[in-house]
Every structure is written in structure tokens, then in C-alpha cells.
Image 1 (cartoon, rainbow, N blue to C red):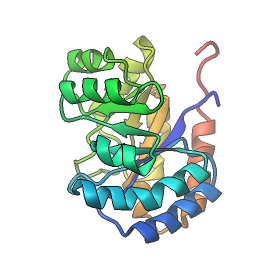
Image 2 (cartoon, rainbow, N blue to C red):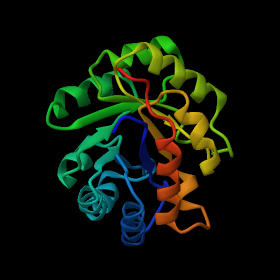
Image 3 (cartoon, rainbow, N blue to C red):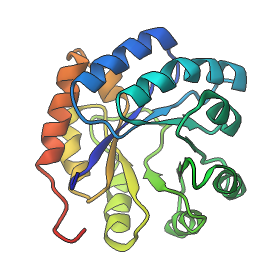
Image 4 (cartoon, helix red, strand yellow):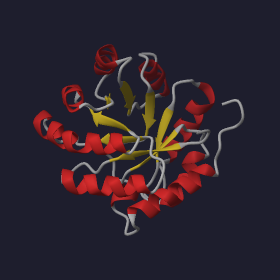
Length: 213
């Protein structure tokens, strides 16, 4: 698919069975590349329990199930990969442990030099945008600048975090990012989720990558 794809991020707190139902609705709306199970405040036991419910739903929908930060929960739940952004050493350990069978992603770096250094570990993608910050209507300017810089110069795929409305998708897709991440725009919208995902895909389809990318 020669255009940006959707990367969904779960709310930081949720009921697993309820979210599983919402994810099924989301997949009925169209293409989703990845779902990040994002529970930054949870311990391994709770995260693994939630992932055991969500991972099969995500995989049945044709997407990669990624667990945030906890390699143990990711491995035991049968997830497709892990997203690690605590430290460079943690990223290196995850790459050694998970690849090539599973995905390792990272992000959250503050400086361009750090982004390049972290990507050199061999991660499968790097995410631009702060997952723990309150979302605004539009994507953060720094996220847009970083994603555009990265997409132009580097081979490692990048994910760019959009704002909390679908209107931001066009701006984020225009950066050339391989994936566009949505969080609050999906889970806090009054719009039916399958319709929202369908509209998101229509917007992304209007931003194909240049020929040769």
C-alpha cells in the first residue's frame, strides 16, 4: 500500500473486553497497520492480562499487535512486537531479544542525534510525538517537522502522532511518514468508530508516496 497507514494507540486505561469490541468495529472500517497496547501505568500482570484479550482481536483484524515497554508481557501474550522508549540500552536489549521474529519500535527522543542513534540499533520504526502528553486538535509542530525531516532522509520507517481530530491527518500524511498514529481521535470521538476509520483511510489515500519511495 503506497501511502501512509494507520497506527492506533489505545487509551492508557481501559476495560479490555470493551476495547476489544471497539477494535472489532475499527477493523470493519478499513485498513489498520498496527495497534499499540499502551498502558504506561500498568504492571506486567495487568498488561499481560489485557494483551491476552486484545492481541487475538488485533491479529484477526490483520494488524500487528504491539505492547508498550514490557517485553515480558509482549512475549507471553503472543504479541507481534514491543515499543520501547525508556532508554537506548532498553532498545538495544529488545532488538537482541525480539528480532527478527518480532517487531521492535521506539520513539520519544528529544534530539535529532538521539533519533538517529536509536534507529541505528536496527529498530523497525521510530515514532515522533509524545504519547504521554495531552493531545491537541492538531499535531504538534515538532512532530510534523521531525517526521518530514526523517521521511526525506532515512530508510527506517517512521510513525507520526496526529492530533485528536481527523482534520490533522492530512497535515501529518503530508510529511511523508509511513504511518500516522491516532489515539484520542478514535476513542474520544462521538463518531461511530468504523465510520471514523473509513474516513481516516480516505484521507490517507489522498496522500500517496512519490513514485520510487
